[in-house]
Image (cartoon, rainbow, N blue to C red; front, side, top):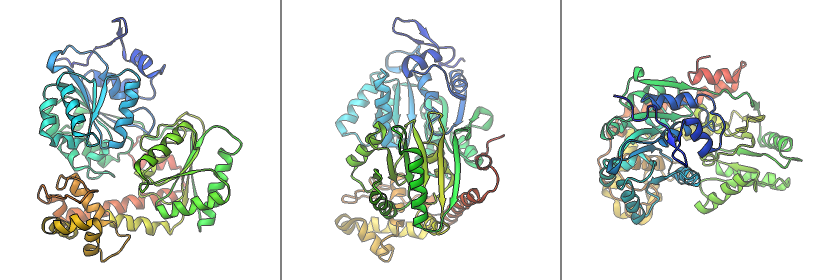
Length: 495
């Protein structure tokens, strides 16, 4: 049976069929595809499954957006739709707004919507609206969503940030492990999984979690083939040296030029604020972005950065997702990142216009201690999960009254900087045990403690993997050969 996508072309304003390259020009304003985009699109149009590993900013989303705009033979209640699974609620609105601005009928459904708004979109989906619909994988827990999506023919399933499928990945989401089951619910549609970062182990796990085999999935792997990016590492011994390198880089790229912008990444908010004071004393104009800022303020900073009103931002890794800005001339890591995966994601934001850009990592060996603490905090053992769960079951009155601080006092011996409780609550929310990790005022236990969180051997294996990732980053810093070659080897890119 031929794929519903095969050989199709979208109709233009006067009913004239359009090929993928016409859609690219008409809706997205580009004259030519980049890298393997066209090859991926034609493979998907022919009904082939694909795993796309492509650097940040190289246009992965077009690989499913263009097929979504192809016409359909379906009509009525079974009208075709492309379903996009993404874990990033914060980005969905930006992505959908951009599509709607191009005249594309797209929408998202997630927990940021009020109940009435969600119901309105459910009704629209059931009525046959939307060519693209963005949801989180957790949306499949909702019976009302399953009812409305079953009224549609999902012609293409796009799994964005596909590394979240894998427990080996750096941002594991438990609901992604249900994708094989979810694909069956949707009628086993053509599937494309997309990510910027996936080691060979993660690549194979993604395919397995989709319920597919390597023979059924074609791999498109671009690696870092961006010669305009200069990858630099400098050993530093103190904060003064870090400040000097930051100032020199800012001066080289931004001073005297009205174009371009830069990002300086920090691990800790308190370090970011210290360097903000240092730069302010030097009269260096900048803004600060981190997760403790109020949401509206974060949004304003990002908009000012995108518009060019703010050209330099000091940020934690909370900044960057959805920042599709072409003229970022440098990305500095003032502290050691936690893994090569996160480093790779963040440097991918530089030089998207194809012009020269600098990626500078400032390596202070003492930063390893901070990252080792972060790894410990992000890997509570099975006993810790059991204790958190017990408190949630038996001490709801106290937790509702006094919140996370009450839990921390009992579980972390009042160690103010210990973040294991936050990690545990986040994982329990991801597994559907509690509704909202950030609001414990009405906390209710909705499910048993998952076996994966009670398995001490699994917890130890995860801790070991995270430590190995950090060690790989140290090897990258210390390599005397080509750093691009090192990254290609780590991510399994064949030369």
